[in-house]
Structure formats: structure tokens, C-alpha cells
Image 1 (cartoon, rainbow, N blue to C red):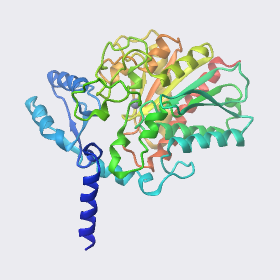
Image 2 (cartoon, rainbow, N blue to C red):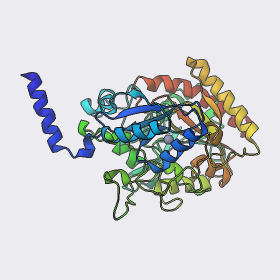
Image 3 (spheres, helix red, strand yellow):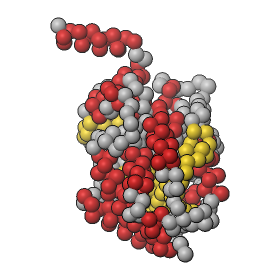
Length: 426
Ligand SMILES: [Zn+2]
């Protein structure tokens, strides 16, 4: 009787939900490992031309590429991969089911800020407000702009040394679905603020500017509280609408939004990005088309003489990346960038043994991509030390990963922050 009732409910759900909303049930994460140059090139072509969702992009020969495909896409991609001699291994059997199991907000609704679970935009903003109330001598919160859908973009300033101190600028959440990034950055803020006596010296000599949710619309969209709409959990782009009038794509809803990390005005659209709005790596109709990026651009330009380091947190892949992403040529000062990154990673690894790759974004991802934030920050704003950090090893982490990731990443952060203190404060 109970089983029959469940079946009836499931059928009812199928009947009332639009087809796209259910498309992640049965969706699979496939892993292929290119063994030849031709196969690598084919996968790169698929990244910009196909509708598949690349969770881990093609890098080098011998390194895994993870591609998420819906049930309806499966026959075509298997045919396509096989014709290139690529064998796909199934890494996740049912992505939709995995989301339902791992995203507890579907069953419990939002709760107060902590690091035992992921939190939505509103909860994070309320928590930032509470920090200002609880630590008025240490924290200030500024509304620095509005998103496309009119959500506030907030910047938390932490420090007690006065306005003339060097600045470390930290942002996360540019890619909406990379939940571990805002979770880790808020963990680090909390650690710094609630232990301010321990970090007194650092906080009096360096100012920290944190933007934990850089893409508020996209992030909020990933928290749509409905199991039937679990596709939203994997939203990556902004929510601006540049849909072509007559889209060839059957699933038009995927044609909304721009990849913020392809939209910066430095070698924009030259390589590894795409002018089709239906793709995950859509660079936008023009550089800085996205208001969220313009907000960060204006802040960084206004503070460029003070900002000594820019950190951009993403997931996943366990990589510590520095410019350039758009070319295989190394920046002149790459040795300094590399040395400091390796020191930070060594502190991170000492906590739980987690390994990170270190190198230029182009080298580690083995392929140039232009329009990313760290390239613009270094190439245009002139901030020497710019890093992008890919946290974790899964797109849909479990909540218990937050504290572990927070603890180890905070050790890397302290190395970086202390470097700024020792180099620039006087
Ligand atoms: Zn990202």
C-alpha cells in the first residue's frame, strides 16, 4: 500500500513538473581519460560546442575529464566518445538522487549560520550583518552594488589598523554551484573575527576585504527549495538573459546567464570561452556585460594601489592557480607567485595531507582560457599577487566537508596574509 502510494506520488510529480525540472534524475557523471592528443582536442571542442556539463574540463593527456549528462543525452555522448576511442566510466549513477541525499535544505529549510551545513544567500547576509553588530571595532559591511536581479552585493571589511594598510581582497561564489567556496570563505572570516586577539598583529597591519557571494542571483537560484527542481543546484552562471530570439536548444532555460569567469576584459573571448549563451562557458555579449563583475572591477580599480593580493575561491579540483590563464607564457614574476603558492599549499597539506597542484592556470588546466578574473586583476589592475583556488574534489560536496576544508584552507590563507603583512606593512 505504502509503495503504491509512493508510486502514485512519483507519477503525479512527473505529471505536474516540466520535463527539464526532472532531467537530473538518472543523470550520470561520466569520466573519460584522453590518452592521445586527438582525443584531448576532441574533448576541448566538446567543451565549447556541446550541451554537456563539464564538471572537470579537459586538461592533459592522462588526466580525467568529468562530464555530466542527462539520460536523454546519454546515447549520443556514448556514441560520440566511443567513435573517438574513449571509454567512459560511470562515476555517479544518479546525480539527481545524489543532490536529494546531500542537499539537506530540501528537507529542513534554512537555519541559522554555522559550518555544519551550506547556507543560502539570505542567511549569509544576515550573518554578515550580525558580525558588524558583534564586532563593531573590527568589521564594517558595505553595499557595493546590486546584482542583475537587484540583490545586494556585500563587502565585509575586517581590520583595525586604519585605512592606509595594505589590502587582501577575497571573493568567492562567482560560479553559483560551487558551494564549498562561500562556505570556506565564511569559515575563514569567522575564524579571523572570533579569534581576533590571536590574530591581533595581522589584523592591525592588513585590511581584509571579503565578498563571499559574488554572484548572488546564481547562488540564490541554486537554493530553490524543491526536489523536483534539483537542476537548479547545478546552476553556474549569472541570471541575466541574453537568450537568442529563436534558440535551437530544446532546453531554453539553460541559455540564461553568463560565466562570470569568462567575462573580464583582458583578452576576452580569445580562447576557451564561447559566444553561445546556452553553454556553461558563455563569455557574455561583451566584456564586463555582467553588473556583478563591474562591481568587483570598480572596487579593485579604486583600491588598486592598496590591494596587494587578490584571492578568488572556486571548486573543484584541488588546484592553486596563478596567471596567466589566457596564454602558456609565464608572467615575469612567476617565480615569486609560485614560491608563495607552494608555501601556502604546504601549510594546507600539513593539516590533513590534502595535496594541491600549483602552477599557472593555463599550465595546470593544460589549455588557455581567457576572460578570467585573476588575469584581469594582474594584467589590468596591476595587482601582482592574484590566485584562483579550486577547493575540494567533488561538485556536490557533503556538508561535513566544510569544516575540514575550512580548517586546511585557513592555514594557507594565514601564510598568504602574513606574507602581505611582512612585505608591505610599515
Ligand atoms: Zn568556478
